[in-house]
Structure formats: structure tokens, C-alpha cells
Amino acid sequence: LLEAAGTGHADAQCNLGLVCEEAGEIEDAMQWYEKAMSSKCVRAMNLAGLLYFDGYGPDRRASKERAFSLFSEAASGGCASACCNAGLCLEQSVGTPLDLPSALEAFRCGARQKSARAMYNLGYLLVKEALDQPPAGEAVGGTPGKG
Image 1 (cartoon, rainbow, N blue to C red):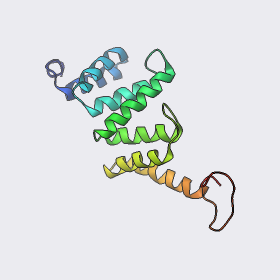
Image 2 (cartoon, rainbow, N blue to C red):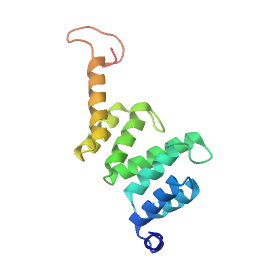
Image 3 (cartoon, helix red, strand yellow):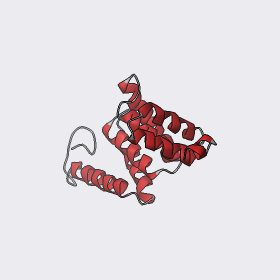
Image 4 (cartoon, one colour):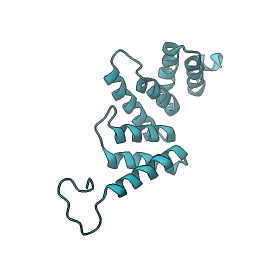
């Protein structure tokens, strides 16, 4: 694994990062994830995003923003887990402003790739949104859909 990672094999670099992370060597893990990300490895982006989400780095707020950025980039590259993670950030306003329509689209992205977690979150958010809707014909003031 180390030999393959040393030759620039992005999947090996990502896997070595995961081994380091599991051993509690977070700095080493991030170095390997960064190397894999330089080759556009979406799995490494998602895994690094999780470390940032958990507070890696000197500034916790900036870490959440970096996490969302990495999740979004990995999702654009086709990582189903990252789609789900980006959706959760958008749904809960973590590292990015609240944006439920974009959260739904992120969950749909993951669901199209057969992510059970994304399917669950998509269904949950759709049901939640449906329950927040006023009954047909009922006049409600305020923001539509927030009855």
C-alpha cells in the first residue's frame, strides 16, 4: 500500500490516509488525503471533509465551511456519500446557509447512486416538508410552506 501510494496511486493514497486515520494519526491521514485529492479522488475529498466536519484545523467555523466545500466538490465528482453529507450540511445550515431545495437535490443525487442513507434523508425531508404544508385552502400568513 505504501509503495503504491508513494508512486502517486490516488486510491492507495486515500486508503493509506484511512489507515492513518483509524490509527489516530490525523495529521498523516490529512497529508495522504490531500495527495489523493490532488488527483481528484472524490473518496479522499469526502473523507477529508469528514475530518474537517469533526473540527480538524485551527478554526472550527472555517472547518465546517471547508467540510461543506469538500463534500460539494466530491458530490459533483459522483461520490454518493458526499452527496448525502452535502445535503445534511445544507439542511442543517452547517458550513453553508440553510438551503432546503439544494439539500433535496443533494439527497436525490445520492439516491440516484443507490445510497440508502441519501434515500432515507430524502424521504425524511420530503415528509417533513409535506407535514409543514398547511391544508389546502387554509389561509396562513408568513412564509409559504412553513405554516
